[in-house]
Image 1: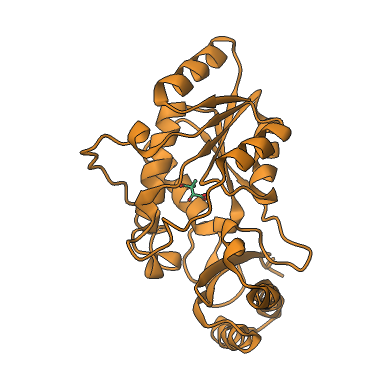
Image 2: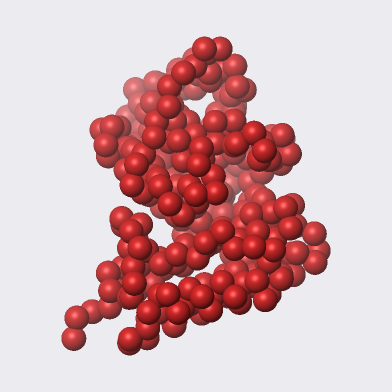
Length: 285
Ligand code: PAF
């Protein structure tokens, strides 16, 4: 696996590959890789001739009180995992390699970038959109793969790419779960043993909510109230939101109809966990 630390290095490599007629698939990450990320590498490898992972803990998407400094970093372990998985190149710039000292641009995606996670993390999606635009413009890949675990992030990136005419195919990869249902996340490392035992309740609850809202006559207000209570009863400290939305617009739904998604975020001690689940569309009788 080729490791690039600067824009010039990675752009020269991309230029060589494009010159050979190879298609390029990229998986942007912040490192602390787990099977969820590696499954995205597999998708990139199936779709493209050459694969690139990026690792950059992006300061733009963390608020001052959030876990930027504490965010797990293990470049050596991540590099080994990527290489074992057959990744062709890793782009791991440091901050100064990506940002001029007076960097001053911000990309903000209205609509899908509002509500849900944006309520508790108002800077988050601007930071994501800005760094992802930069990475796509530096690498100019044919495809970029993002996990559906961050469902709203995926919607923001799709919208940004469409609105700005960035010539790349955005692919979503299904959520990878632990045996007990907990969605894999780099932040699961923060959980104590006791919290780890409680954590799968988030998925169990939204899965049940998905079944309940699919039943004829069910209304989201009632299902949401029950789900929120169940998450707290399981031992979570607080619930940021449990929302039922149209899967493509992320607008709220009152009852099952178009293809839906239940999105949820809840706090377990200091750790904020997110998860989501698909709700199948209701066919007209
Ligand atoms: O999902 C992530 O790891 C990050 O938000 C991303 C897309 C790499 C942007 O920093």
